[in-house]
Length: 109
Image (cartoon, rainbow, N blue to C red):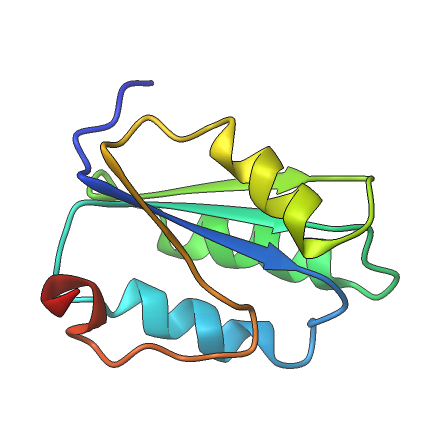
């Protein structure tokens, strides 16, 4: 599916089931739309992947596309590179799975 978004946000995630929802909700509350969000689970041993999939199902809309991927090679770099393979937008932003964005973060970047 072709994206009309200008920016993709790639978030590598490893064992963040307890905290990642706050990060994801802050991304969903961005004032700039449309957005592509690419979440890459990096071999989590907790239920992170389930949290990512459930969140994606709940928030995805026509102007907020969510893609959940898995990367078996350990490390944030491998997860970021896996996400980059899926980018179809002219701009890409990386974000950490334990941070939160203010609602105008992407708009003012």
